[in-house]
Length: 267
Image 1 (cartoon, rainbow, N blue to C red):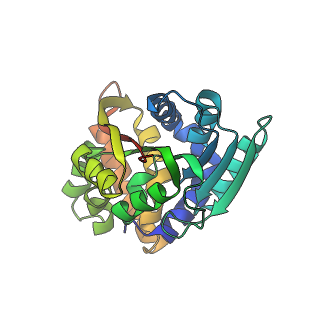
Image 2 (cartoon, one colour; image 1 turned 120 degrees about the horizontal axis):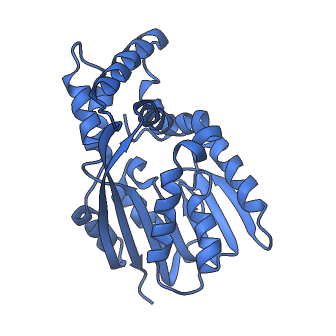
Image 3 (cartoon, one colour; image 1 turned 90 degrees about the vertical axis):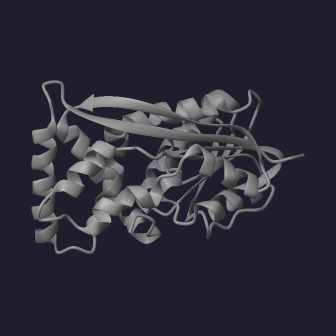
């Protein structure tokens, strides 16, 4: 299902080469997250679910990050991360192939722990927040960004209305992975952190239907792993046809909700 870490990793292995081009809006969210962190130097950074490095790049540019550790279960994503961060002058970048719950990092060693557009894929979110909190030094800062409740609701309605039905994993994933501000705040407080700000940004977007479908494939292709390839392709063609049919003259319209959380470990 949505939180199967090994399957998620394999999915992102397949999409790593095109991720930056297809998911360019995630770069904007990464910058927004970093800009919301306290305005102070944060040289030692742990980036959990680092992907290709959007948040780490923003930390270098805006918060003085110099020693960064990128953690991700996807080997291909880590390779992109190492290539990009390693090319920046004066930056020490290391990678660790692991999930948030099995990462072996020293406790209390980081000035900031960040995670951009990965939080929704963590299978046990309260435990994930607690693990990230343990890695912070006293006074250190946590920054989280994920997809919130309501993301892609229009697309989910299309999936649920298809007859014959598509696989349950496709229609159930949103409820499994998305959270709201109250839930995130509760997790932060349960981890012993002081919430500084928890908020969401809800946007109505229009895009070319094929561009929308490319994003879905890039981030959720793993949901088809258990299907026969021909069956998956047949379902995919029906979904693509329905999305194109639902598009108007200005493209396919959908909702995207970015869920942000910023917190500090008490000194």
